[in-house]
Image (cartoon, rainbow, N blue to C red; front, side):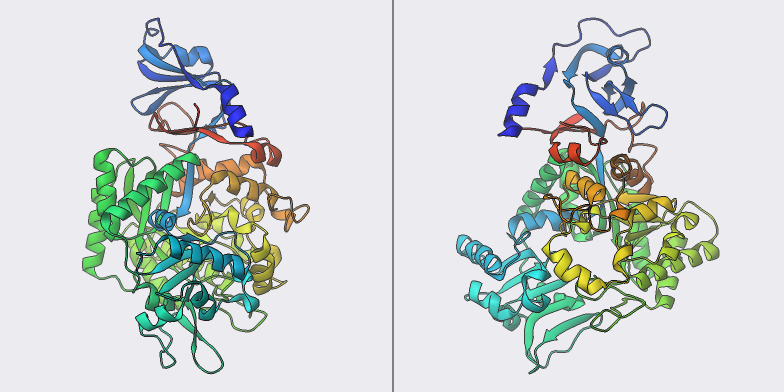
Length: 562
């Protein structure tokens, strides 16, 4: 109700076309946005009133008069009526196709009891009787006694066909008995490399698969056909635009999805700019490297390009597969997917080929390994602008946080990971242990160390809704304000810092700061308008709504009723 009332009172729309000719030498802007409150992100002129756009690029940023002076005959003048305008948001770490595909699955996010999870799965199964498998994602460890589900619980919801549910972090999968049969997994099945088939005391599979073992079952799930996949990606683009996203960085791109993006590009329908990382092999041969170089050379536009590779150094805290120096409370130090020697060798090779490198590293031992590999590559291959990245940086040692800045390594973090809900306190924190908890997701310490920090969501692990991420970074509480003051409030950051991490710093993380990330003449006309001042703090962020998203000068989202 509040949203509709606000939008009705706003009445955002185009004014009459500019009646006068452009000022001499003023250019021929096609769209002019006036009467706004513009946060530019530019240190020299952080605030303005208006923007002028020509050919998908910003022609002017300044006062209403300065912007109007750039308008050509027949230019559209958009009255922002006091809306707050920001550079287009840039999600520095997500899995866009994977996130889009979840829009056609059972969504278990926010379900924290076994009964609720079973109800959602059973309802989806009834609504989709023709589906050969029932597939979903998003279950939380804390919903189950002992932190893990069992196939019998899934059998009760889907007794008639295979079912496969991925945890919210996508590092653990849950199968029913029919899915185990379809995958040929039984008591004699052995753990694959870098994976675990969880078994009960009698040696029978429980239906839970950790890390690489998930492929034993997920590889049997029939994929959606090409047209269905395309439609879901279109839905994902619409969703992202509604959140104010104009750019996204794919942390691992499947080459099989290229035809979808070729089609979107040809149709002019790619409404979020994409920078993507390809899968990082341990021993890349000449053929793979040549293919990667060819993709990098072929796709290099402002809208879609390649330039990086992505590797997984370890797993996640909740499944106790993140690689740690010290044991978990229940024992074990996690799973490292590489030896230090393997990682050093591969990083040096890809670095020599000129690729940016994304390394998923959550545990302190994995983060240390990643930084060591980057340091060695720089020493072996000589100086250049690398901007290699550590993805997630969840539980670093503070002495390693201090290494990011001097090494020029980007800390690619996800503020919604801090959301202190039931799963956080009943699964994440106990697995982390009291010694590591104070340094978990240390956003302020990373900033204070002088590192470039780029914010993302890891969608579909968490929602790619930027307003949620901003609020989490600033408060470290739930939307209800729990725990009071925030979980480890010493790691909260200010609203403007959080905005920079979603805009300017995210652009830097993909070598794009010259074209986007701030609002200045000559940069891409990517911006978002919100109903409240996102730089003013938590209360203002909490009441804000995205009203308008513009990418390349054209609207990609307008709130209903505008």
